[in-house]
Length: 74
Image (cartoon, rainbow, N blue to C red; front, top):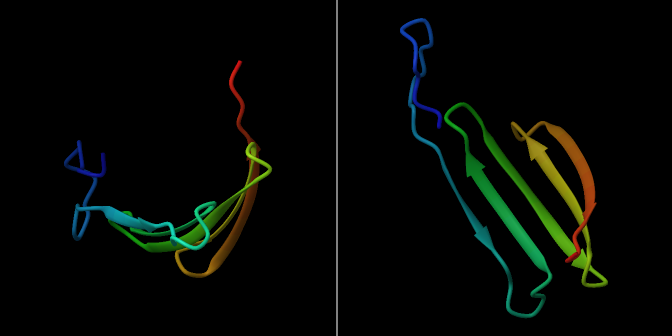
């Protein structure tokens, strides 16, 4: 999705990817690192009470981002 579709868009290295890790001693924690063709981002999310996710990320390794969401089956 990061490959340029226009000649006016130039990217130095149009590849992206990431890894995630869930430690065996705390399955509800997910640690994430990614490269989005411009910047590196790191973060984590944790599942609490089977439905509530809290998220913390460092966008471009400089800007903190917080979030939460609720997930349930209808």
